[in-house]
Length: 364
Image (cartoon, rainbow, N blue to C red; front, top):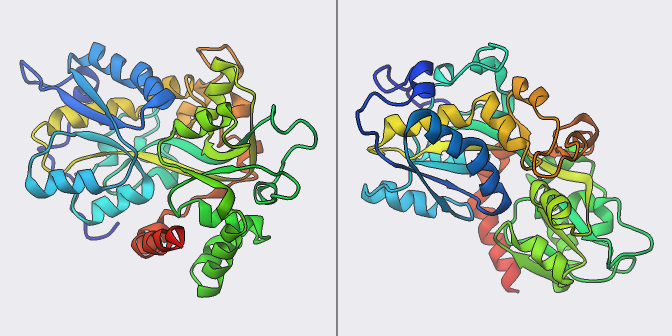
């Protein structure tokens, strides 16, 4: 992103410091914020606990449901109690543009597992000025096979087909994902979805498609809700995060099936709040958590793909269940072939207006 200063040399920690901890005799406790649930447990086991063991830096953990409101409030008043936050990439870029996040020098991050410099090891779509690539996560839809015993859904169009597959649907209460899914269900090719959404006609088409199922939608906000709604039979299908659906199936024996067609594949990022007084410790954690080894440890506990090339071969088995995890990862070739790559630049430009329009549509 242009117009952002590089991290100045006195702030950037060396790779050695990131691995070994800060130079202060008594490092400050940092607060790491993420999405909670099975994702939070995977991050805790794969990154946070190993980080504290390696560095001696204590970590508090808080959960949130995304967005920038709390980050803005903390930075605006200068009372910062969050340090490192998991962010959707469009939020990370918007926060960077608003001066809410510290810039990150990718060259200061640890090299890949095979020694490749970080700038080459991260996939290109994971690199932004103020964010470090974390994991590929996918918004998919899933169904409870106990409630759909005969012909089963296989395409995005099936999610919107109430005649063929009657019953309530679960969807996240945001425009992101829902507008893309609606256009794909209405026959728009994946490579034309975002060009269509930049036009009034394309937006109208998306909302018209959403109109066809609106009365049957139960809206969710937290990532744990879709699995609960599916388990309770409150909905027969729901959009959801692929890793949480997978963990619910293999760890809780839930009869959930993911439909990969039209999955919205996105990169998550870690960002550091601008002005945190615990910057050294926060940088140390960010470097550790985005290393290939940490990403692989997390991905081995929940089926989100590492955003480092050298981290991908390190993930073979889902550690809690022993299941081969490759077929369940969103960025593997077979699943990615049916994916729409999330266009964060579109949402950076159109987030506010589409949030307003979506809220108005919901209220009708």
